View 1: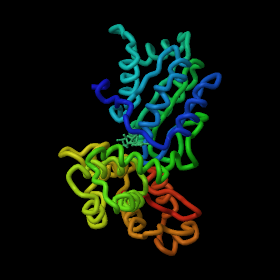
View 2: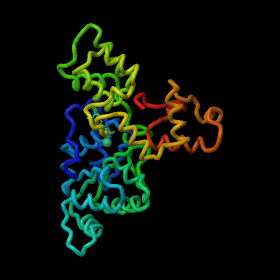
View 3: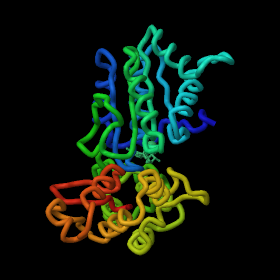
View 4: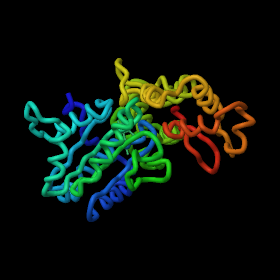
Length: 327
Ligand SMILES: Nc1ncnc2c1ncn2[C@@H]1O[C@H](COP(=O)(O)OP(=O)(O)O)[C@@H](O)[C@H]1O
Ligand SMILES: [Mg+2]
């Protein structure tokens, strides 16, 4: 079950060369390294982590092994320990505690080892987050251990000196040129070339805010639907075109991926109203710190905004509060 939850390194991966290089450099410095890959769902955090982890330099540097932990499977500290023990293939005797076995292994490691905690928002936002924080901080103390975490939100978890890729909100959306390369690579031979198709793709990608997951899912529709129709569907139905297949999952549906954020960060009631309000404002809320109280009178709007920022569903640009188009 855990093995099948570990994703393959994606074939199509555009416009992230610089971030891969930075991540590899950080992990190849001396001593324990803590790399945080933050951002909204579908931005490409997991893909980036896989590329960094599998680069030749990183593989050489961590002779003690590199381990990918799909944390969406583990809600609390206990199951996280279980996951680590399983992925690291440690043997636990009947009367031994799993945590003891894990810590002994990390303590006696001869070579540097790398643990990649993917989708860490699941255990981190669980009810017993104190235990998860304690576990993470204890693991980080072993001198041979370096960590990579991918997580929705702006900041890495716990009191750990994370080095963050991208800017203060995490990794950025793709630039238009690599976004288009990715779209074309995903669409493959299904893409009909016409005089207008280039500008139509540009316009679609612009409307999708260059979010990788949205690019991939929209390109998959090109197999069945002409570009022009796809654009007018997006204008009309928004995220409903960004799904693939029958069963919704985090990588097959943008709206599902957004729903996961709503659940994990418990966005409901007032908070959900605020989120919906922002989503109807095409330019977001300019100078939100000054205007939020006028727009949403009542208690706690600053606090609500801070929760929304934690979930990465909204971000701040030039002092304005904004939202990625697919949201
Ligand atoms: N740079 C990229 N170029 C092309 N496709 C990408 C890129 N980054 C991510 N993707 C695709 O977008 C989807 C979401 O990426 P993923 O890494 O799972 O995002 P996250 O972990 O932030 O939710 C995946 O299907 C992935 O293959
Ligand atoms: Mg991910």
